[in-house]
Length: 191
Image (tube, rainbow, N blue to C red; front, top):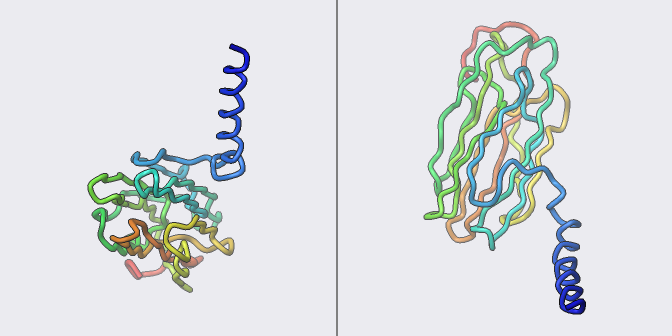
């Protein structure tokens, strides 16, 4: 009895030990093949996105997000909404309408295509306009790798993303759209 119990405990420890050094110490917002809805607290915007791919778990990813308060000069968001949605298995480009900033993400997994649909939660700050916009390189650089975006400089915000889906590899690569926001009111809608 003791030898069998000892063997069971040792096999469990052998299974758990490598995981603790891997991706299991992160605070993920989802489990594999599960939907999620993540929103930053009011007055904060998304500043970091991480994901971990697993082919064995339905070619899906675990996701983690971090938020940060926006600079005082932007004021409080006057309106927030869920913007356009993509369909699983398709390419997608989305920039928050009305010059909004990304303050959340929701996603639903579809077993039939081993992919997710996506939607951004956007917030509007008075009449501020984006400028000095740029698009990141592919994240992850190669399909099926771990992925991480951390906004490189305070004062830049995620405004949207362009994503491609590989039907062969069953994974996505993302290019995030990052912009600064004016310190003054402007007349333009959706740059």
